[in-house]
Length: 395
Image (tube, one colour):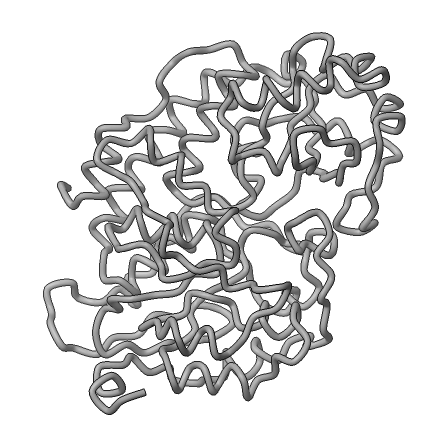
């Protein structure tokens, strides 16, 4: 890296939080079943309400003034100025950046799981992924790729790197930090990683607020917080009482004709926020089917028929539109000897489950979509025009 590049870099201060958190549980776990890399049962339950931290919020009117933002496991991360380029762990953080008016990240874990078609519903918002790079190449991540992307900040939990991929050690994290920009992130999409038990999780809005402080976009965050609160107010009367809410099975089943499924019980983490907000009842929670987090096992139609959930919610299908999903997956189920006997298939209650990685914009879209499908409402639950205004900076 050249001298000019280094002179404008933002440097991380390695405090006690990083020393304790970064090394927590460094046993490697390189398995990746079910397409999400979740490995264990939940260990913590963050709230979905934002938590203000005014002492950490930098002055947005100041220029050239160093500031710091604290997040676990890094501790306090110091910046000389707001980052201009960045790399994101996944679509959750990428969506947060877009909501804050930033350019898309140079790379995300897997570009195929950053579903930008959600933005089609938001006036004036679009993301071109054509030049975006997948950080995971052949099931591994190289330091050289992060050097090449050269982000001003790497919005990645370094524990994720060290515990998910063989060959990554603390020295590698230090090398990337010194040659590019600081690490700043937390693995928020799942509460299933055993190595994450020694430091806190953040809800979607809490993580969003932290990133807003990094990019010095607190006013955008506050505007989006108001949108989120209004959405929750509008959603509340749509959700029926427990006895009127059907139970659903959440399964990962990719492709056009899935026959094997990874079962999920609805838990914590941002990937289940829309289901928690909709108060979806879990059809698998009281069954003999083990959660994929702990079992690493798939189930077939025969096992699913034993549970016979009233509603099926399929992950791994977010690249499809509603009509594409029905013309492929649902049609396949209807023609399959065993799947066609499922109550959900017979009643037409098979839906896309929503993305694994959700941020403040995508969560609005998938929550409203599923509310329409599950609760027989066509109400518009959030102001799309206002979301577009916030993204563009019209606060």
